[in-house]
Length: 419
Image (cartoon, rainbow, N blue to C red; front, top):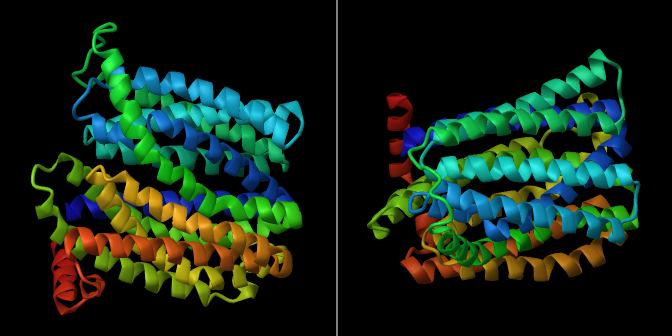
């Protein structure tokens, strides 16, 4: 398992670095206002993708070992079309804008949804190498095409992002279809399709509700900042958030593999000890990384991203406790998800959302983007505290079992030697 975690981490690190390149390119060449517009567009797409997960999402990974992948793909695709269409129309009502924006929102959200469905099915069949390769190919294409548009062609406008994204999602999607065709599953007509759809719907609603609520915790502050300030402020905030959240690749890489193994394991209890051990190391690494990030001077941020982005440093500082809390959150939530206990994760995100809304309402008008970062950290800490209590009740694991000890250091040393 550890070798697979390291491989997934390395892939996600590469993907994170390429995502950083996307953030840097859009910030450097489009400025704070342009970066803010891109961030709001990406957030709108993410919102649609969340609702697509109500008939798919992580439940595709959960059911892929047990069901025909083509019977899972059909209802997931149909639901994606419905959500993208309805969601785009709703966005046009709630946030009136040009028709071109809504067209790009519909098209790119649909492409992302199809790609996410395909690679989730591949991961559910333990095709982790294909899953990692397609993820990194998508972000590499996006970064490369943006560099070509901005630096090579001199096209320094927000629409350049849209057209680069079309190619970046469409090409990996085509490859993913080829990989799915290599699986032993064959289309068997409509036989079993209804039962599979009902089962997918049953699992998805519980599994994905927490993701929808978590999205509100993660990104609601963007909309508050856009309302009380402007796109420029959103751009500065998004850079600070992107840098801090990039560190989550450490715990998320571990949690993803643990989730897949827990889903496939016959003895769920036997997975607890290795899960806690890896989680302790992931939390320690996360804390160390985010502290180093918070110590970066404002001048460095301004030099890298542009003079407007030095103001992102206080954002990162206020996000430190929240980022560390989420490392614990990811470990707990993946454990409960692997057991199918989605209600625990749902209540954790409800607790976080109950903190997010009033905190954003009170802090952002007074403190701006620093208030947004404070509100976000408060939400993460509250949600994680709830999960830790539930985890202790479910497993008997006390607080001390989350703290790294000498045995973990020895274990890590052995892993590094084995590499």
